[in-house]
Image (tube, rainbow over all chains, first blue to last red; front, side):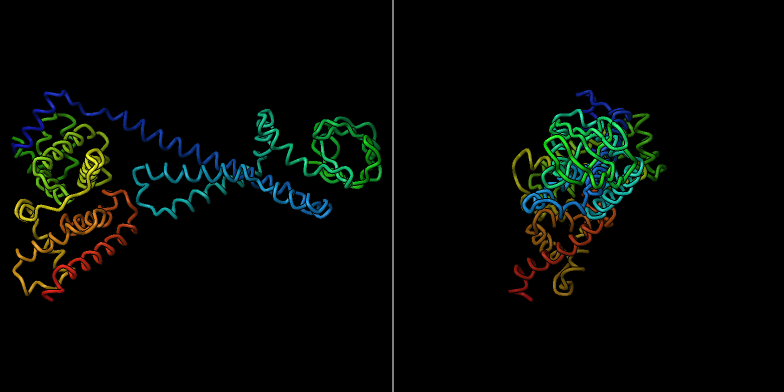
Length: 227
Length: 203
């Protein structure tokens, strides 16, 4: 036995040094993989929300807005929040993946591109199974989200420029629907001659209406987009 | 008895399995890696032999504690070098010091791989005909000591410890492409320093 081997054996015995049990390493490794999967899933949700918010922009309605508002709408409708969330999650995934046993073998670019592609693929699938709608429902009860959502929706609410946006409260007849906008103002909307796009008038559904402002409570619709 | 077992068990992974059952077999791993790791620690920049031995002990204690973390899908050698690298880095961090200049004489005599130094000389310096090998090795080590830490470690692992790119990637936790480009950069740095130090007078 070499000198150093003797010293090590003595130290192990004297200090009561033990071999760390396997389960502790397994637990750490599992934690890394679980957090990695959760981060990828959340980044996919963020991607689906980005898709949802971009597709949700009524591009053809932008020219109908007043000059400065058109600019602010264009800038304001970019889904910054979800872009930031997605970016932070990609950064997390990158570093978390690096902590896995084989993570260091891949180049930074490959890891980033891989995680972005996986998130986009899962995010697109989530979009088609209406995950963003469900996420919106859940997040609506969280005040900052509600505020952010109302701000986004507020861009489509400009009665004097012929646009209102809100939720259908009730359908009075084939002619009139009652809509509550985002500042909780009630509108009687004449839809008799309006072109209806989407799934029809259902209470609780979001609508965007293009038409003519009559007075502070009444609006005549030319086009109704049911979301 | 351990000598007999050591000669029968060719792979380190087999010895690890044995140590997990009976810790006295840990001595086999110490015997197998003591010289290599001491040389590696010294070349990473340790000047004081006593400190190097303390660090070596620390390495083996960490290896012993973490034996269950060793994955036989990887090479045991890479794993133990990784632990040594971490121990040395954390020593530098705690002591708030940088790698020092190597002790040249010990560097050549103490390790069992002065061939490794000659590998570096053969590959990077075309002077083998002009000096005897020992003289050249001393010069190479002197130049190596002046190569910045990160690049020096690459050269030490590649030429002296004779590790493959994949093994270096596992030891330093860097992508293989990065390892390859860093070795090339390290070689260039080595050449530059060598030429400034010796060739301006002799070449």
